[in-house]
Image (cartoon, rainbow, N blue to C red; front, side):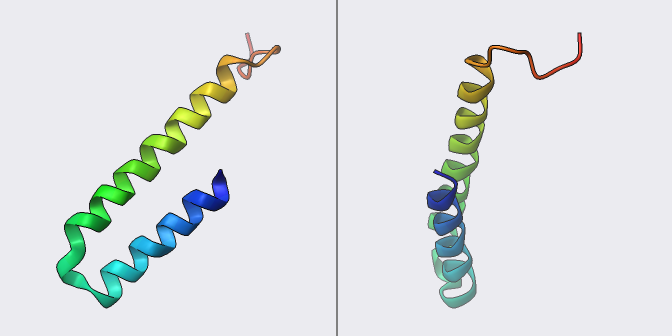
Length: 55
């Protein structure tokens, strides 16, 4: 999944550098990637057997 996120970030960088008029689309893709990264993180820590924090 991280490769998909990296690929989407590369698409965003291309849109910003090559086609500045598509900034709204690039912003939407960036928001989608950040939300998916947060979702993957929370799903990963939700199913951990040993807690990630020191208690």
